[in-house]
Length: 109
View 1: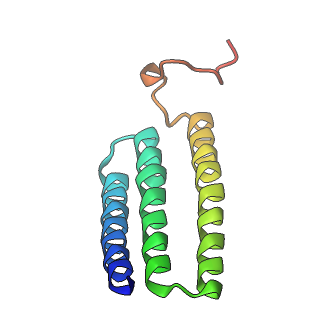
View 2: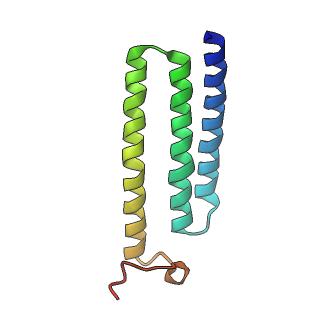
View 3: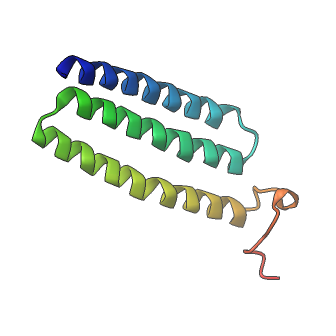
C-alpha cells in the first residue's frame, strides 16, 4: 500500500508542477490584465493543491499533514482575494478595455 501511495504522490507532484508551469507561462503570454489574472489564480491554485496532495501522500506523518492542510487553507483563502484586488486596481487605473466587458457593474451607470 505504501508503494501505491508513493506512486500516486509522484503523479500528483508532477501534475501540480505542470499546472504551475502552465500558469506561469499564461501570466507571461496573455495580453491583458483579466486574462493574466485568470492564469495567475485558477491553474496555479490547482497546481499548488496537487503539489500539497502529492506531499501528503509521500510524507504521511500527522505533523506534516497538519502543516500541509494549513498551507492549503491559506492558499484557498488568499488567491481569490488577491485576484479581486488586482482586478479592482486595474479597473480603477483604466488598464482594462471596457469594451471587452459583458457587464460593467462598477461603472455607476
